[in-house]
Image 1 (cartoon, rainbow, N blue to C red):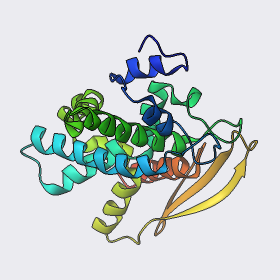
Image 2 (spheres, helix red, strand yellow):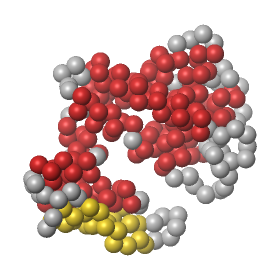
Image 3 (tube, one colour):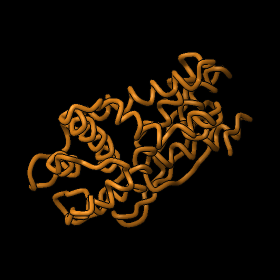
Image 4 (tube, rainbow, N blue to C red):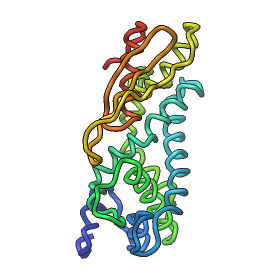
Length: 232
């Protein structure tokens, strides 16, 4: 790792894996908008499957008392764009991901890059006779094992408030929740979205830096209003 001059040595240290084939690492760090060689979309496709498998395997092993429903919900929390974006920020991928412009990349491209990176690790390890899936599983467990072991239903209720609200409204015989965009403010690089969540006669409003986050926060507030609060 010490011989790298392209800034990826630090990434390898943070990730916990040293690449033997730097071409795979470069591909994983190339966004589709870039003109600097092959982009990471094929790797992202493979990495998505690997990540879901590894998280599912860890949950199945660590939570033998759980049924399929809770396992699926926890996996959804750990593999969602928000969770992958947090991982990307911890890896400092924003400074390494090659794109076609100078604008800061949003959460989705950075999340996709994490999946591409996991696929690159798998292929790199397989190429030298190692168990690629085992190597990826080790990286995934390093990231998520503590969360899996300490998870409780409140975790996904807080992180996936929209699904929790949908289940809650069905249980209370209310109409399925809908989300109304009340407005958007702020500059293009830092927008603010105002959303109203509605379920029958009940409604709650919230703002966020993305429409999805604003909807999630509005769902949390509506759950509080319905007496099904998810506050940490």
